[in-house]
Length: 206
Image (cartoon, rainbow, N blue to C red; front, side, top):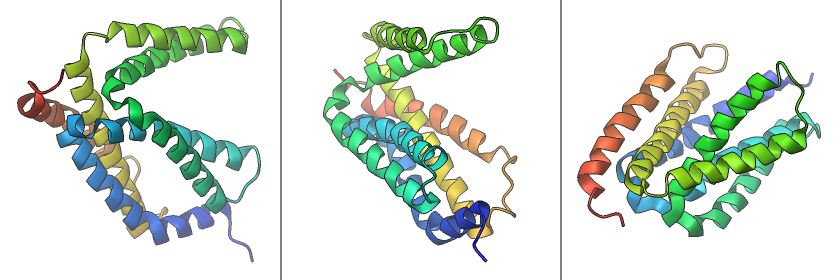
């Protein structure tokens, strides 16, 4: 009898979860405490996460690809995006500012579309313009944006690592997703990481 999709995912997480989780935990700690030293890696990770998740979700949901294959397809696309963007690590703050601008615009568009239909072309143009505006606004804010951005990514990575490790060890059925632990980890990493980086690297960024 073939396994259901949930059983397949549970089997994958049980097998690979602890390994992947520990890697993410180590990466999260590194980004939280030493983000400015890892700007190329930081930029690559910032691009890897959305590209890998999006690509994996698309090939799984729309192409009907097996979940195991979809994961590796997502990883491959994410790696290509990350490697391509690693060379612009010194401009990491522009990426963060642009991403925040796009996030704000996405929220605004989601509210507008509830009352008025929006052509997807105009929506895409609005998101592009918001990215440019966001990047422009943080032009002279390299230090704080880099510190907070790297700490945030570190917190997300650490929280994801802890979650994946827990799921791998406990199984999906026994995992409590409403504990709030991930949110606590992210907030603590942002606060502690930003303060530590300001103390350690505050006079080293151009």
